[in-house]
Amino acid sequence: MIDRFIIIILIFQTSFINSKQARKCEDIDMNCAVWVATNQSDCENVELVSSHCPRTCGSCGEPIDPKYDVKLLPAKLKSIAWMVGKWRSEFGGKAFFPTIPKFTYGEQVDISIGDVKMGTPLLNYTAFAWDLNMPEGDPTELHSENGYIAVDYDKDQEIEYVSLNTAMSNGFMTIEEGESGPNQVKFKLQRIGRISFSHDSAVRLMFREWTMLDEKRLEARLLMTTTVTRRLMEHTAVIYKKMYP
Image (cartoon, rainbow, N blue to C red; front, top):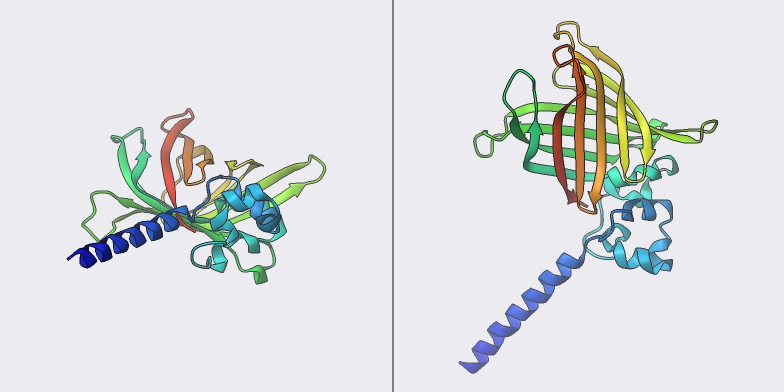
């Protein structure tokens, strides 16, 4: 009886230790992606990076899928390494329309490293938002968009610009550009197009803001001026949790 009790205790302790080790395999600084992308040798040579960024450095856990491994980022994209990953909000999205009541939604965003064979260094971007009142296991799409993120540096002005091109499920295509900042970018709508049988766009001005809040959370806000509101208003706001890596 005593031997059996000891075995149970040992199993519990082993499980607890393994669980604790698994929880430790995560970054504890939101700058990790940029640090490691900029100089991956810091994982071995800089104590701050090695101790704060074990997951991004790859010193623990399963090997990171190459599509999300910032150590493989082209040099031109290293400043936006913080974007790379799978981000999800189960029920935190809030949408505001002038003609209908406010509602909530879920959304997942996937930002991965594009194929270098395409020539221009790019990040792949996809987003899928769903209705929270959907039947279990059967997401009802509210909106989806796919596109690419690129970076360009203006040597004359010494400013780095980030561009986001999207094709949306509602038949619209956008080109957005903005200045890159530490763990933040604010896009401004430059061009908007539509397929011939889509309705006319009511959007007159649009800003999209992405901001890292900490190593696990990314905030996204969309602000618009439309033919209805005629002033800049918040359209959507959501905070994602990083799911991978």
